[in-house]
Length: 64
Image (tube, rainbow, N blue to C red; front, side, top):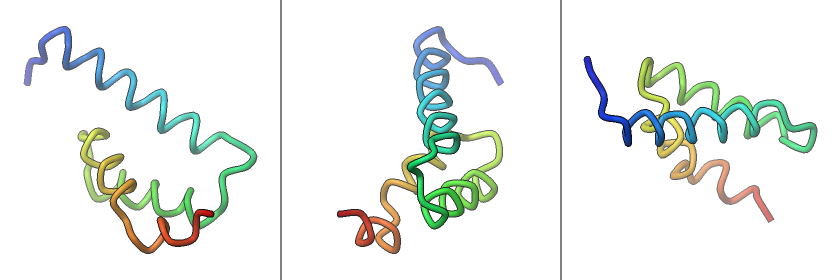
């Protein structure tokens, strides 16, 4: 699979966000678990995993 330069830029940005969320001390265990689950469910597609994570109502309601 080949990607255009813009696709790699977006993928790099998404991966930066994911790494920041997973490594942040303030990230709650439910959020971390949810993001890891979405990454596992979307292998090779971190963009889709992040979108699914952000759309996940089970964790969105817990964020104040």
